Image (tube, rainbow, N blue to C red; front, side, top):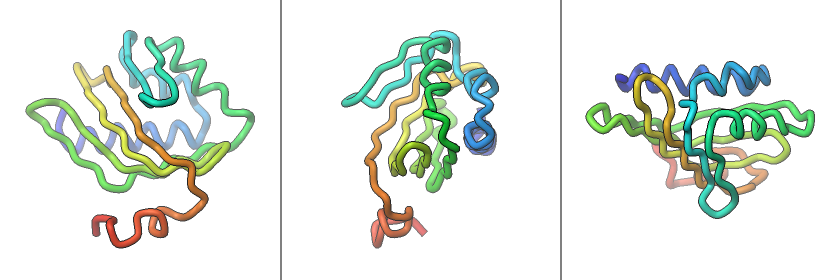
Length: 126
């Protein structure tokens, strides 16, 4: 995967979450994906991930990716993001891909009502 293809993948994920098209979103993850926030949850496999996505409490979803980097040689990327659903989260995700699918997704996030610019403040990347 190229850096541009990784950015396009994240855009498809964000669009799918906004439309609550969770089957489409889950299809971008490998069957045996490992998905976690190390301090809060760990999901193994696409079926568990799909259940996790569907448990949206009927709330509209929105994800915005901010800074995105991708190492083509290692097929590992990271992105800062804001997710809005039941709460507003700001965080960072580290993603491993293989054969065009996400095999590992590890996120670190904080519940915070501020906008991204307020949250990141002077530390945000221009």
